[in-house]
Amino acid sequence: MVDVSVAERAGAAVPRVPALAVLAHYLVGYRRTWRAGVFSSFLLPVLTVLGFGVGVGAYVDRGVGGVPYLEWLVPGLIASTALQVAVAESTWPVHSNFKWIRTYHAQVAAPLRVGDIVGGHLAFVLFRVFTSVLAFLLVTALFGALRSPWALTVPAVVVLLGLAVAAPTFAFSAAVPSDSYLALFFRFAVIPMTLFAGVFFPVEQLPGGLRQLAYVTPLWHGVDLCRAATLGVPPQWSVTGHLLYLAAWAAAGWLLARRVFRRTLVV
Image (cartoon, rainbow, N blue to C red):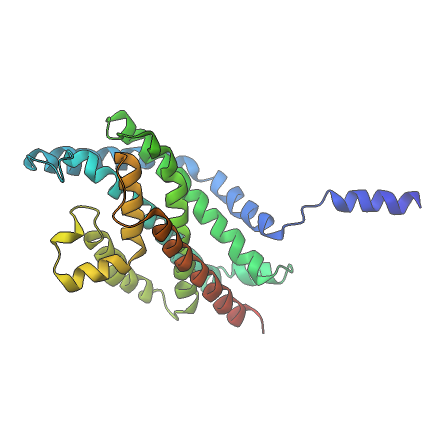
């Protein structure tokens, strides 16, 4: 009886969430490489703010809606950074785990459930989004570009935006037969979304058709929420509407990613 109770206590100490083991796998790998990205994590925001916010902003005399261009631009850049990081971590890394290094095949043989594999990797992507945005917020705060204490809510907003982008991108990266489709995805989806979703200029300046497409993208909703938070003004949509829309993208992407992963990994 003593041996059984000891075994039970030992078993209780084992983590009950296998997805955390998957997350730990990626964190261990990232522990060896994070130093290489620290410099760029701070240098890129500085160069972007100086180039666009200060450089281009010098030619925008009246700002946007009465707000200096630098302060108006910063929240869009923050949301755009979250998008770029989420997509970068959800395309080639996911595709390579299927096609080249076959990490997912090893994990499913561990055995781990498909939901644990997807959830653990998504958690790591959100960790990367969160830390990258924190660096951007710190830099922009030093430039005095954050006008409201509601800016403290921006990390939570971009994590939801990152999930809304990363989850469907997981499904796409797992489904395509070649990595050339990932380059097309950047060219015809990510770049247009970045240019026309309200990051650099108001979407109201776009023609009607393009404006409606901008409203469909998750990035515009993230930009509007971040801009409202950093400027301390109401968003164009309701906060609840934005959050529900991003949550719908995240939920649909999660279900689709699990389906594609299961179809590929479970024979």
